[in-house]
Each structure stands twice: as C-alpha cells, then as structure tokens.
Image 1: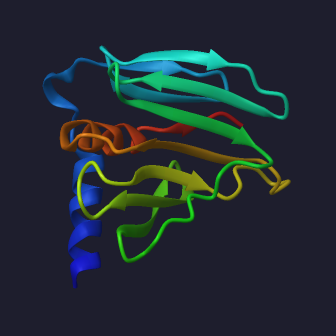
Image 2: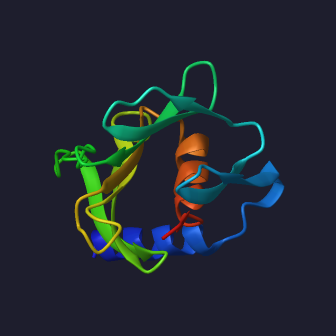
Length: 146
C-alpha cells in the first residue's frame, strides 16, 4: 500500500507544472529536460560516456551519465523507495530515500534505443526535500532524441 501511495504521489508530482521555479527547457544534446532556472548545467569530460553535471546549490548537484556503464542505481530497499514508471515512452527506475536528505534520488533507464547498449542515469545524493521534489518533477519532463 505504501509503495502504491508513493507511486501515485510521484506520478502526480511529475505531472504537475513546476510552478514558480521558472523552469527552463535545457537541450543537453541527446535529451531535453525542464529544470529550475537557478540550476546550472555543465558538460563534463567523459571518455566512454556522455557526462553532465547540474549544480543545484553550493552543496548539492546532480550527475548525469549516458553510456554503456551508467550506474544502475542499486540502492538498499530498506532505506529507499524503488519504483518503475514510464517516462517519454520508456521504462524508468526511480529511486528516492525514505528519509529526505539521507540517500540517493535518481532515475535510471536500462536502454534507450534498439541496440540496448546505452544506459542513462541521473542522480543526486542527500538532496534537501525541496530539491528532491524539484528533481523528481524535472525527471518527468525528460525527452530523449532518437
């Protein structure tokens, strides 16, 4: 029942408008996503992956990895909620800590194209409740380019 309630809340949150945070639609090259205007994205050096970082605050950031070896977001089910949802017509794994600020919040796609080789993950650690909610809202706006 708890997982069902969380999934309903998550889907509702993802479906909601981002409100007063002035979202910007950012083109990351291989995908787009609406993020709060105050968040700053930076391309990082990647050797076998497409790597980005989104700086949320001086203490919080999101890491993005699109490639063969992207982190599968294997978290402890005793401390994290793990749900599967459809985003941009693709199956996504969503993880979030049961206690705000204590664990990984992220999204993982096992494969994004017909070759089934490239994976995608975006995650942050120990996010504040506000930033965790904004991140999960932003995840729902992901649109991948073919």
